[in-house]
Amino acid sequence: MTYRILFTPGDGIGPEVIDDTRRVLGWFSQNRNMAFETEDAPIGGIAYDTLGTSEPDATIAKAKAADAVLFGAVGGPKWDALPFEKKPERGLLRLRKDLGLFANLRPALCFEALKDASSLKPEIVSGLDILIVRELTGGVYFGEPKEITTLPDGQKRAVDTQVYTTSEIERIARVAFELARLRKKRVTSAEKNNVMVTGVLWKEVVQRVHDKEFPDVQLSHGLADSVAMQLVRNPKQYDVIVTDNLFGDVLSDEAAQLTGSLGMLPSASLGAKDANGKQRALYEPIHGSAPDIAGKGIANPIASILSFAMCLRYSFGRGDDARLLEGAVERVLADGYRTPDIMQDGMTKVGTSAMTAQILKALDKLN
Image (cartoon, rainbow, N blue to C red; front, side, top):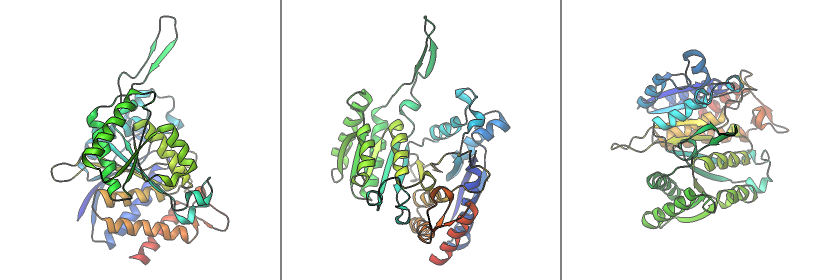
């Protein structure tokens, strides 16, 4: 099989972790009966610097034509002074919107070898395996009006609008319930129905979809702030959490940190399936551009590499290959190799390239 992949390395450590992910693609091409047609395209700050826009039309067109997009990171203090509508992050938001990537899957998985790296007690996070399903193309990030105006008395007034429709909530709920069927059949829906009318609608629609289509899945509802508290109190009570764009952004970063490092965790952003079962998809590490360590060769490539594992599973239907790659990462961590962000006493500190080299060696052994 030949798969078309678009790389959008972006800014900061994005190009570094993407380059090492290419090495992993090369291994799979040589050893697992698959081939890749790859292309690079600019997005974010680097695109603004070279093309005058953070969201080039050509990049969006190439993303639409690809089987999957492997994304690095965007943003950094270099572009802080840009007007809001030109900031690097607009490139990522446009990719999500134009490709119709409404479902963001963010796993929070604590590898046994890293249970002591978490800020929580090891017994709290040992065996942690949560999947947060975040609605990605609606809500306050895209609602209109979104503006800053000047009032008659000279004050500034800023408005962001939280908007959701029934169909937007239904489709993300279905994704969560379908994924829960492959896991422990438990879904928690998080919103703020006590103070937000969008939360009232969210709860009603999720409950209706559950009752009509997924009665075999256990559903519970929680206020988003309470869920945030429970994530640090007793995170293993959750399996799948489905929530809106804003709360999903916050809760998934919180859950990620439970595992020891943002540098460890991948994500997938998926669109609707067409008549042939194909769906547009973007895969990205959630650690951001980390400009303070860019170019130093010490970035953790694991989140980007595990994002490719998600690509193997969700876009290419290669579950065995995804498990092989995840197993290689687990073995390397068990063998004591650590990038600086997850370094522990008695372990072997390695940089970006060396960590990837160890993962490739582990793949050779496991294959």
